[in-house]
Amino acid sequence: MRVAVRFGKTAFRLAVAGLIVLLAGRVFAAKALPWETADKGLYVAEFHSDFNGGNYALTLVRIDPAYYSFRLLCASQHGNEQLSVKDWALKNHLVAAVNASMYQTDGLTSIDFMKNFNHVNNPRLSRDNTILAFHPAAKNLPPIQLLDRECQDFGDLLPKYRSLVQGIRMISCRGQNVWSKQDAKWSSLALGMDAGGNILFLFCRTPDSVHDFAQLLLSLPLSIKSAMYLEGGPQASLYLSTPKMSLERYCTLEGLASDSLKFALPVPNVIGIVKKNR
Image (cartoon, rainbow, N blue to C red; front, side):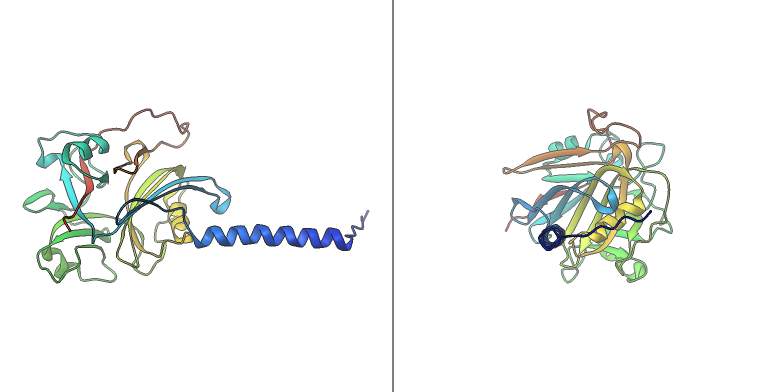
């Protein structure tokens, strides 16, 4: 049986007006993120996204390299002591810090190439396509780059930087999601670079596939140029402390309640930032 539904003019106009308001809200949300100034050149956005029907809890940190220098700290260079990301930061006077990479079963060695000045944590350059390069040997080089094998000459650039962290590529230099689709889900931590040369710490507490996390990042108004996966699950951590704000975020595994992990786990390698003297 067919049921005829007929809108009166008033009801129709109200429905259209409501749709316009709803769409306007979505467009506004797509144009701006809730950035707060943690300090000059340092910005934090914390919010929930309903991307693709989900409810993602996100913490994003944007760092201007004009105001901050980057540091790589390895337990293999500092007494083999694993610390939480927060403790790494407090002990070494870092403004903010994240895991530098996934690591091997020895609890010290990165899964990929990692070098900090004369200290080599892992000498093996794997097939993974991204490397975070900082501490340039020449003044005419950018202070930090997220290198991509498809866009840049690794062989030429690697000797020109003193600190190097290799990782798995999530978003290519062409702005494409290159992570394969998967069923497994976990919280994730990534590092990105935007079109303005800012470095992004990208933290998603909500468990999901890394492929979908990359799609979410591409959907946000971040002007993201490329991104590298750092860590997932309980080890993934982010810490930041300035006179204006402080936060500590760490992750969970699929199937665990969001508040089931009460403390950050120790990790062997971190990337942190310190303020430049200007």
